[in-house]
Image 1 (cartoon, rainbow, N blue to C red):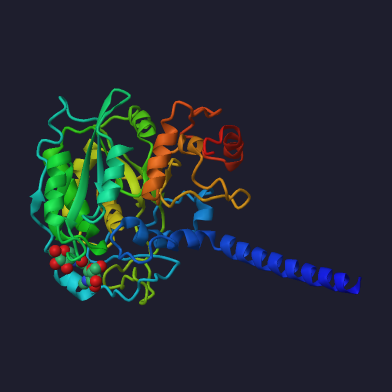
Image 2: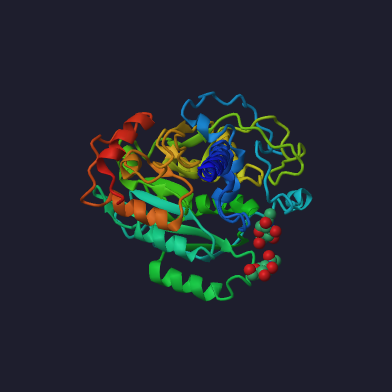
Length: 415
Ligand SMILES: *[C@@H]1O[C@H](CO)[C@@H](O)[C@H](O)[C@H]1NC(C)=O
Ligand SMILES: *[C@@H]1O[C@H](CO)[C@@H](O)[C@H](O)[C@H]1NC(C)=O
């Protein structure tokens, strides 16, 4: 009897300890949702994809996304010679020190050759394509391009509107990673006719060059396009919603829509990878800019931006740079709820819902930070004839987790 009691006590104690450690690990898991989301991705990769590197200078934690402050940028006058970045999370990659001096010295070297062009991209459709999807990629990310081609980046008619696609690439920084890169990229270009390759090194701090060169390319080779979506390869884009939205706009007028970030501050912590010294940017906040996952612009705005960006000094962070170009043409970017360029914030009450409710995606336009398989799965779930969401599309309504949670329970297409 006593032995049994003792055994029970030990057992209870053991269970208690196990429960506590479980709770603790859950807590650890839950508390830094924001930070975790920002840092969890592929830690080994150097900042080649936008998402890895871009997230940390969000002006507020993603939890605060819903009650977004819509403050108009205080910044009015621009100082071309200086600019910088804000952040809250110091980067884990901070040893790859950025050489500002060299950057500033080479700043005027901003015209690079186009090694692979698609001059007929926009000439195939009479009157030009309705939407050009331009996706930043790096040579090494062949699988991401493949999945984008097969899913949301398909060149097809969506609601009767022609969609075209290009990938924007520079030359790989580490050529030993993919010795056959030149053969690969030429083969890819021949097969899909969607590769644009420029002769600059494809690094994080050279993404601004990609921005400039793409805008120039679009103005020259795709002037007849109606609208452009520019984004990353690790996003999920609901092209149907985008077309639906764009049909209500005029391509000959200004339009720039995305997940707009207001009043972001340059990072002054020297150790941060995103550190921008005052000599580079002297003001205390950046102009309003679109978060990197993706944004939309009209043909008209594309041409204006292409000209404006030529007059703006190179700045190492491409979305801030584009914000500077927008400011130069005095165009206020529009914040749209459908752009979740920092991923979806899962409600702590229902972490299991996370990203995989297709009914949730149905209402969105762009969701950032998805794995290749997730993009494929979401696209297929969304296009499955078995999908039935009880709620109708409501792209413009701010999203509410409560309602979505109900929807998930009813449909649960993942079994
Ligand atoms: C390039 O990649 C290879 C293989 O991943 C690695 O061993 C090498 O250190 C890298 N070189 C540079 C300069 O990053
Ligand atoms: C950008 O690309 C140019 C041309 O390849 C290269 O010389 C330069 O070092 C790159 N800059 C950065 C910051 O990576």
